[in-house]
Length: 216
Picture (cartoon, rainbow, N blue to C red):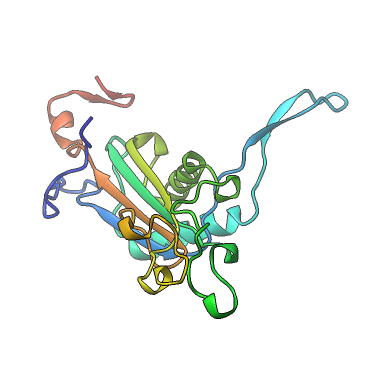
C-alpha cells in the first residue's frame, strides 16, 4: 500500500483565514535515550477495590516524554486542526552496548558478534515507542487528539556506523553491505516527522459536511 505522505517536499496546504492546521511536514530531532510506554498490568482485588489495570512506568519514560514535549513546544509553531488527518514517522536511535565493540587494541571497532539492528528485549517494542511519541505530541499541543494520526511508521536503529568502526580485524559479516535506516542518527535520540495527509476543514465546512461529530 502506498504511503499517504505527500510527495515533493515543497507541497504545502493553504489554510483558510483563522484556521490552525499543519501546512507542511514538520521535523523534530532530539538527543536522548528513547524508551517506550510501560505495559498495562492487572492489580488484584484489595479490600473493596476490585481488579484494575494500571500502567507500569518504565525507567526514563517520564524524562523522555518530557524531552519530546519541550522540544516540540520550542521548535514547532504549527498546530493541527481537530479534524485534520496527519501521518507520523518516528526513527529511534539506540546506543550500542560496549559488548558490541572490541577491547584493548581493538577498542572502538565493532566485533564479529555485533548485530546490525536492535532486536533484543531491552531495546523496547517499537509500537510502544511510537505510542509514547503520539502521547507527547498531544501533550505538546501539536495534535488535538492522537486519534488524528491515520498513518504511522516506526523504526529503531543503532547509531550510524562509521567506516572506522568496520575496519577492525574481525568486523561483523554485514559490514560490506551496510546501509543505515532512513533518519538514523549518529547519536542516541530520535527524529520525528509529522505531515498532513488531508486538506484543511474549510472546504468541508463550506459544503455543510462538517458537524461537531466530524465529517458526515
